[in-house]
Length: 336
Image (cartoon, rainbow, N blue to C red; front, side):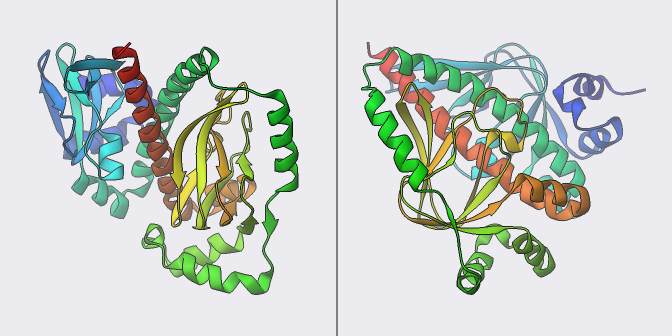
């Protein structure tokens, strides 16, 4: 007979990715922690050394505003994750998580996550798939919130300027690099810390199925509404993520070298929104197309797990940027 906590996890969104046996492995080696109503699960400003999965109950994400009070940002329930940004980005929590009622959580520590990487990579991959979908759902909520604010803002919107930008974008398409130029960039790419867990054979396979691009400034790589599941690795230069609506732009983050970024479509191309990515200076990028990602997923699972780890991390970094914008917006609302 299944323990109640495991049964509830199977009935949550987590059960869509992990079967009973895989969840049993998680529960057998990690602690179930219970928090009373009002108890702090994660403290703003402190780094989380693991990820909490809500088994039962509700937790509220709150942020301090200028030392004068707190703002409730969202309520999370069964199957949701807490601390994933702090854990994956290795940064202090931007918000606190507080139990709304009695909350049961499964705490997955950093040591156990490393254990999964070494001995159960498929379970870690499925866990990161679940995290990525939750992140995309939270991004969708924040995207809609920001779109509503943009629509009612006094930001200048110029159709003529929009047409000019479209013309410029059409003239600044990425250009594939010449083969003889590749070695210098590929050697640099292999030194990036994000690839330290890849074997030489895996890197060879990855480079064989990738395209090296030379990108001019102001070149849009992932457009508004685009459903292409490609991802990119910045070798040189920088790329900016933004939310674009009615020719208005809300900037989120700047992505520099040694970083992979991916669109929402890499997790699910049915999501009805996208984040726009465009170069903010001349850049060199490695593009991994949707077709090649599907090849890895079907034929090279170990390589695919490692690439998806980077995709998940890129989405969590995007979530961090959106959360910062959410807190800023909450501060502005608080001060009105």
